[in-house]
Image 1 (cartoon, rainbow, N blue to C red):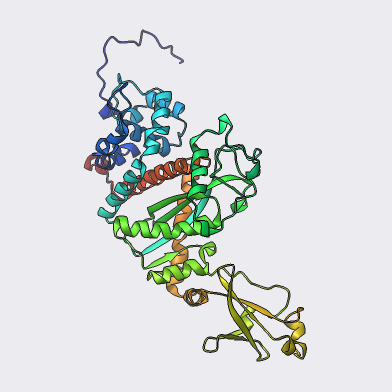
Image 2: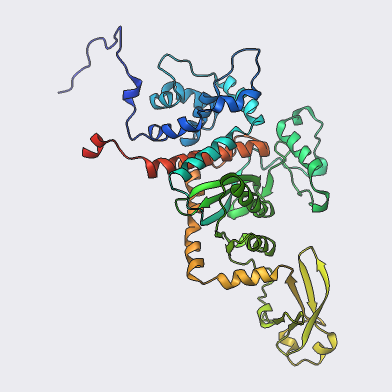
Amino acid sequence: MMGRQTGDQSQLFYLFNLEKRIPAGHLLRRINPTVTRVLADLREKLAPFYSEIGRPSIDPELMIRMLIVGYCYGIRFERRLCEEVELHLAYRWFCRLDLDDTVPDHSTFSINRHGRFRDSDIFRYVFETVVWACMDAGLVKGEGFAVDASVMEADASRYHGVKPEEADWSAPERQTRAVAEFLSSLDDEDPDADRKLPKVISPTDPCSAWTAKANKRVQFGYGLNYMIDVEHAVIVDVEATPARTYDEVAATRTMIDRTEKAFGLKPERLTADTAYGTGKLLAWLLGKGIAPHIPVWERYQRNDGMFPRSDFTYDAERDVYVCPNGRPLRTSGTVHDGRVRNYLSQSADCRVCKLKERCTRAPFRKIARDINEGARDHARSLKGTPEFERSSDQRKKVEMRFAHLKTHHRFERMRLRGLSGARDEFHLAAIVQNLKTFANHIWRPPPDIQAA
């Protein structure tokens, strides 16, 4: 029998305890003790960025807690985040707002987030404090690290790119933080780096890079660089770069040095994909005493049927390559492009060689040898060992971090512009992922729930 709801459901008074409404196993309840410890001295850290006069601002702890909620549940727009905190009981509880407490207006929230919070390094501080909590809990072993990068689409239209020389940075609409950061980076760039401007640049977010990595459509993007401890996939460092392979590989050295300085951690081995297998990085890792479990990036592979480079034997004592016919290839010692020396055969030897048709169509054969070829050879010798294969399997853990971030946290496009904006967003993403890892490994249900 179909019934009808009768009677007035309204009451004059409610007895309501918000604390009792949040389940013991809820994610926000599980991460709350850690967040409380991390944010204990937050106000002291941010005091220099707040004025003594003017209207009262948003409590910085409330700001951070709301952002953690947003990045936990993929709510990255300020207006929607404020609406969700207004309506959702668990969000209110985690943000320490009672039922009759006022949620900040979205415009005030945005002004604070884009203002003083961007001028501070508070997200880096929170990130490092969460990593310390993971270390104290035994989730970081410090023996093996894995590093990788993923492209995040910038908040910039792929249809409005211009050539750098055509951009008018003096236009009123270009007077933004992102443009100021880009112009400042040009002034601060090392003159010896000889870096060229990209062919296409975004007028709204010029720090982003024009990229088509990972078989994606061509777009402006940033590189999210993660370095994880492979034991429990805790993110031990994070770095924002333009979405260019050169910058992402260079970020590896920054992250390793910073992790050693901040936490006293230096891995015994580092695993990464082939993009990181450059002679320069491999030599740097070996100089640091870190075993590079990284496939070597072979730049000079031939597929035209001619003798490959591997058929030429290097004689270190004489510093020559010996061809399949026993003739030497010598070098002048000149370093080209800052990384290779060329070894050339003699034209007279090649003219009378019976194997010339299988070796070269030119008057002579050239072999390019990386100035760090010794490091490349050492990395090649590690490939195929049980330790190398185990590291290759563990590298999937850092890739899963990116997949989880994009799938469960709906993080595929940037919300903020400029490298400082990307840095803030990436730190928040890493904070949330580490908090979830901590909660999943440490939290245990209360005895009454276990018994049930």
